[in-house]
Length: 294
Image 1 (cartoon, helix red, strand yellow):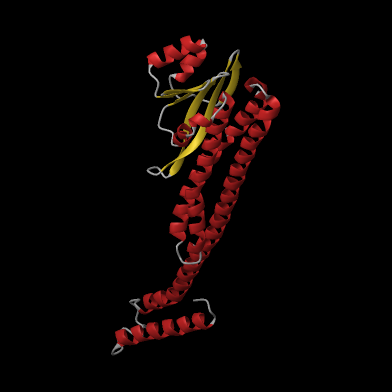
Image 2 (cartoon, helix red, strand yellow):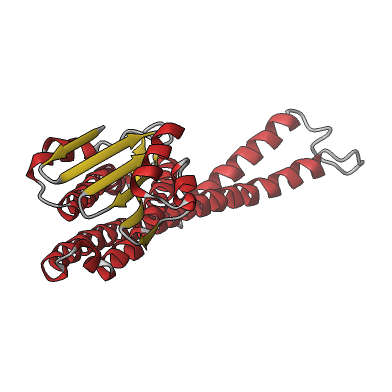
């Protein structure tokens, strides 16, 4: 897509072909290194000024509902005094609203600022699914849903970590843009807009840190509840073992094939042994229950 309004041109390329890149190289006299980087997604974000154009690689998180985590998406910018070229390798939803407002931009800086601002607003909206999941964890606590909470928290921690890693790459990029504000002309009037971008970015990082802290607290609480249930189960098994061991020993003794064994020749000896075991277990059970050990 190429659109021009007044003196501003916006070229938006999705999955650029070799011909697209050759056209860009000739039109803007791009360095071969940059042309090579535009062929595929880049390994790292950066801001570099090459004479009459600025090259920007910008990452932002996009939620993948299939994998249930945030993945990295990329837009590459080539910015001149009167042209903005955006290159990306998949559809980018935030660009749709920018295209609708395109006639309102008066300079390449205005267009670049609007695109980056739209991406940050999109990131803020992307946090909604994390916030909703974090808020859903709290009510599940203390309801014997430790396994469900554990699975939910584990997925949340992965999603938050991925989102956080991608978002943190934006800090040096926005700061580099601020340090290169003179490239866009009127540094004094452009600087507040750059600072606003950085402020919005910091707000997003603060939110993700708040969610990360909340998930960690929920995980600690859930682990304590899980340990409590395990300890209760182990205590029950220990008491049951203690209760049954004396009677197992008693049965083994009365079953010994010796002359002095009174139960072997006794009439109804089997019923007597079973009755003694049952009565003994009932007595021990009531004892432990009264002591609140069961």
